[in-house]
Amino acid sequence: MRPGDDLAALLPPLASDEIVVISHKVVSKAEGRLVDLAAIEATDEARALGKEDPRLAQVILDESAAIVAARDGIVICETRHGFVCANAGVDQSNVPGDDTVVVLPLDPDASARELRARLPERPGVIISDTFGRAWRVGQVEVAIGIAGVQALDDWRGRPDAEGRELAATELATADAIAAASELARAKDSREPVVVVSGLGRFVTEDDGPGAAALLRARSDDLFR
Amino acid sequence: MRPGDDLAALLPPLASDEIVVISHKVVSKAEGRLVDLAAIEATDEARALGKEDPRLAQVILDESAAIVAARDGIVICETRHGFVCANAGVDQSNVPGDDTVVVLPLDPDASARELRARLPERPGVIISDTFGRAWRVGQVEVAIGIAGVQALDDWRGRPDAEGRELAATELATADAIAAASELARAKDSREPVVVVSGLGRFVTEDDGPGAAALLRARSDDLFR
Image (tube, rainbow over all chains, first blue to last red; front, side, top):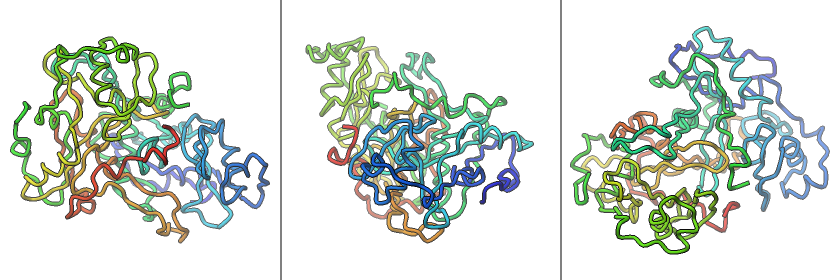
């Protein structure tokens, strides 16, 4: 995948009740969201982050609205979109060239909508990235861009099987689908696209609010 | 499901390369991990948590090793097992009776191992619970007890498709499987068991370290 490549043309045939989960990296590459570290000059603030390559730290800072936590070269950022993740999503893996890094799409929800608009069957579209979690070891795939997939399945106020109102049950459907997609491939497989069948009940006619619906507002957040 | 019920006898036939994901609630019920709120007296510490029912707050405190954060009646706890989740996993939904709450199994990894030992085909066993996430809206199912399923798929030190060493890629496989299982049912469906096929590559002969492998140590944690 290179800048300007037509991602829609590279997808397999999709049905209208399917969901295509695309690793953000190919979207970023198609959109030219690559940064040449040779052109980056690190500030003192970047050097202070303790990364092996201060130029990489600088790109991370440039992609961040805030640093949420940093220690021993681990940097948890709030990106300009509002995602909280390590290194603001800046990534060197599966990128050709030693000095090139990939950054997140400028607006992953817009990327998802644009891609969906090019797919005549209008399947659901999820753009995913691999995020760590507070408190738990290991990473899972999450949805960072969504078009036409229900981000949340809201059971609040609906009764449980005993007739009692479910208090705080709002399932992050799109994140569960993203997590599931990871199980269909290996990290080194060069398979950036997973087609999910059988979940047509989560595919919506409208593009919907996108992954923005999955962002917890700072004012509601106990960990920022 | 009632205390003393035989969960293994209630499972459908399972193949050795399948993974059975079981909602912790039926495991807790079978193990008698029910608390009658009528027998609970709330301390001042419990009242201070701001829950509608201070007796429920007391049970949450009793199940917690530490309170990680609390505000406006939302209580994020570190459980005695080391899980960080809302309300220490104490739950009123899908429980009969107004005054009964379900608490987590005492040792969910042991529960998973015991269940697996009763299944002649030795499929993988995951006991799951629904956890919220820092920074993201909505909940996902995660693995809190595991026997015979690879908790983490560790790609650190292995090369990516470009031959570059993958830096921090340790996929939380068991959590992804738990998350995927949620997509196969509805919250009010009374279907506490999901059988996952096609992931035999993650089923292990040994029971393995269990979900304990997914607990981030406090010393490594930037958010405790």
